Image 1 (cartoon, protein in one colour):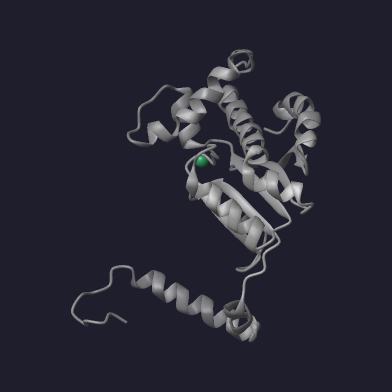
Image 2 (image 1 turned 30 degrees about the vertical axis):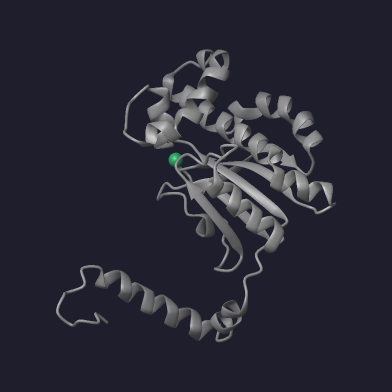
Length: 224
Ligand code: CO
């Protein structure tokens, strides 16, 4: 309810949706909210794009409390980004998640803008990281038969590079050094059919990435 009673809430339909959802869940699972309010105990961390079409919980069929989510434009994990590093540190050290899923998606607006050298605004600075990947893999991207295919490859290559970044930061390196089991997975999501695909990366120690990299590079074009 609006506390002042004077301003009509233009998002009343969303609050109504919420009331209905809460009632639904409480009716079917009376202990759900009381239990969740005590603590969260997720086994998974999801790192994905902020794109409204790629909602973590829905895609993998998990309820609130079951996946710890960090999303940003183009699912990037820059080495010095305190936001994503802090989210990973909390997930690994405090929540003790067992799996970190780094999920890209085809048709990513940020990645498409980079491929087309299109200026968007301030976000272009964030997307510089994608420009670096584009430059690194010029040969792969140039060997594709269409721009559409090249953009698909760039979306996949970005996931591979972010799995690498995730496997190199101090948070995960320290966790592995003390024997904590955390596996980083590289996935990509297809907007056209709602399906997730593994890019063949399941990294539980740095050596895994070194061993799986070549195979992942060979396999990328089979997902789209
Ligand atoms: Co995106």
